[in-house]
Length: 137
Image (tube, rainbow, N blue to C red; front, top):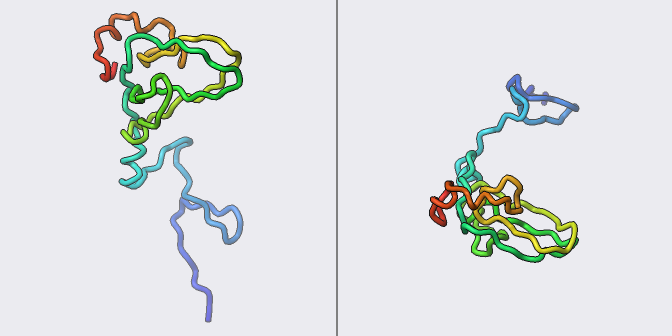
């Protein structure tokens, strides 16, 4: 009984004998197409964040504690994430950050800030004030 020679496409990489790696990508950082059921849960193009409120929320952050700031604007627990981004298939993920010191801060809820998760006054802009709560900017 002899060995059968396997044929592989030319884009497979063999690093070690008997080890087959995934096909090489033609461009660095090229995204692979994913199966349809995965694409439903992890879309290529993430949804736009929606305006949760038009004013920031002031609260006290405790030093050393890790927080997850809602990026999508769909959380019922604003300004923090409750997992709504996953179940609504937005493709967005919360911003995880650690408070450096205990202090009162204003966290953005309009999702248009340039300094996430902190408010920078963007909620006062005409664009945010014209937008409806729950709609993307």
